[in-house]
Image 1 (cartoon, rainbow, N blue to C red):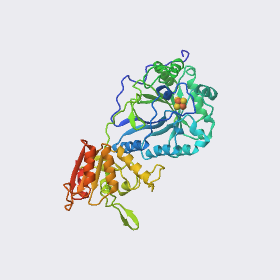
Image 2: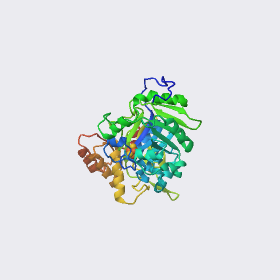
Image 3: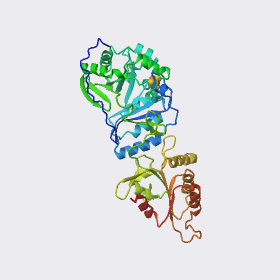
Image 4: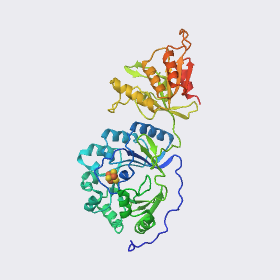
Length: 467
Ligand code: SF4
């Protein structure tokens, strides 16, 4: 290292770091849970930390993303990563994730890949990412691909595919003891050969992001072969001497190679992941896998009642359903989505409307399904995810609403029951639906169940939007 001229080691950064302001994050990282990968990196973070396998709940993620947009959360990046290779997950899952960010103004949308996405059989997934403006993030240790394949254990030289050459790329370059002497030359060579690489990111490896311990062969490999964080000033000084310093943000600095290309160096002085929000399975976590709370989030409400529909000009209309009035837009009540909200009487956001929608999304991705099992399962899953379950009974009997109420009671949900008073009912509870209402109260035991007699659905509407 000594032979490299170090011009300036007093750098760019102060030692102190500010906490992320409540709605401003560096990155939203979605880590998919599957260890399959076609590479064998000797420093694989996933194999070091061994997060337990979980089911990726992409629908719940989409609900949060819908809220983030509405509440003004800001992210500089959204990244799809994985315990293994994310692009090995199904096309449908990746499509759901990509599309939920379509109208979200996030400057960089990217997916990490081992290089798998550049294979011919993955063309449909490749086109999906490209057509939605996503970048691909690849990782290397050398411009010499033969050497890189040997170190990272892979055979497919994806750098030479047309798919790679035509894509927007961020290249991570891992700083090792065997490349620290010529990493500038390497990234310049990459830049010359592949002008489609927009960003070069120099990486210092983490020994173990979960525990910090060196308790496995992969962490030991890192200690033996990687450049430690203590050399960060040295690396930055080399960059400072070769390129024009640009800016620092979120624990990373950048330099300009030319007008179109940048070099990033993640400084890693702050706590790992300090500015990130990480989605894993069905919750937001930190890198120690502890659940993290969000600065602001709206309760998710499910409002059961029979659908009020009529035929206008040979088209079904739901304009008179009180839930259309609550949401404020008929289309947002008809088709499943993650952007239906209810405001209180002062106009402030109060709830995210979770369902039901007239057209729910079936497991094959289509809207509407005539498969009864599919419909019941979808609605039950929505109730599972709600924070508040509301039901409105008029004098008609609605088997769907009744069953949903009982299901919500068994699930110990917070419940609000509104029913129309029917004077001709001889029971104490003056509703044709007295039996399910009382059953729900008994099933829920001491859980939070509120019942209220109302005149009509307009009164329900007023109750729901009450401050
Ligand atoms: S590409 Fe990623 S997941 Fe695959 S072995 Fe390398 S570090 Fe692990």
